[in-house]
Amino acid sequence: MLPIACGLRPILIAAIAALLATSPPAGAQTAAPRRIAYLGTGPSESVRVCMNQVRRALQESGWSFDGQLALEWNDAGNDPAQLTPMAQAIVASRPDILIATENMPNEALMKATQKLPIVVMGPTNLHHVLDAQLRPLANVTGVSLGLNNQYAIKPVEVLLQAFPTARRIGMMENNDQPGHNDGGSVGPITDMVRQIGAELVRVKFSGEAGIASAWDELAGRKVDAVMIRPDTSAFLGEHARQAQRVGMPAIAHNSWFATRYGGLLSYGAVGRVNMCGRGARYIDQVLRGRPLAELPIEELYEAALVVNLDAAQRLGVTLPPALIARADRLIQPGERTLAPRADATPLPPFQPPARAR
Image (cartoon, rainbow, N blue to C red):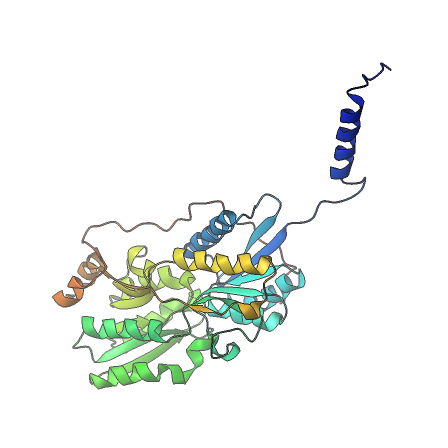
């Protein structure tokens, strides 16, 4: 072995010591990434866009998805009966944070755990777990559309303005959605419809497979126009297709109903990007150890009116000029609406145990 020059010996010894200090001992494992698990009702391009925005916002906050964080996608395949066992399986795997963008998955997660933090980003019914300052009294916080009933009432107002001579207004409800079985919340809508001398016709469906027959029932009951009650975005496309099939004008609370799926009217949420970027701030704070009690729920309501004149032409309906004039976006006859696509890396799914039978 060649002798080491005297001047280089201290440098070499220091370099070896630094290498040993930073190298894991034999057999040691690197820390697993901190897991953020999303649970949804079914495949949804709007939610994939949302999760991509969450990923970008967390990266901008200094987090890395190269071994530091993992964002997982889980959905029940539009079968609400699977939400409870899936929530239980995900909770049993002990992720660091749970995410929900809709009421049904959030309810399933809250029943599955009272300890793991849940961050919501969307229409959720959280009144019973908040104090007067919107601070959480349970293991959930985030950005919600569900604290103010305006996101359900305003679309009805628009629908009545669009069809002032309507005498039967249909309301499409999801039988699996807990909030849709609360008769009290429909009271203001029923009053509005009665004030113009019309009748509210409520029809419910269960699962995506039940949507077509629900629209057939509305058509059979001679409904003039339909309000799709705020629900999972996974069903928007099917509602738009069935409304067109039976030739019935309808409004939904999500702009993608009109802009992406060809529905007639939408009034309400203009997209999830801003909401999900804000939701990522909550995830960032929870990851940094801030208690949920210090993170009040943010109520967000950004509404826009979208009028699809191409759909109006296909349905053979004429909308009032005043309504068209106040639209935030008009889709002209012949204009091609965008096919829904998520433009970033798909999220890896969590693989739960075999589903309960």
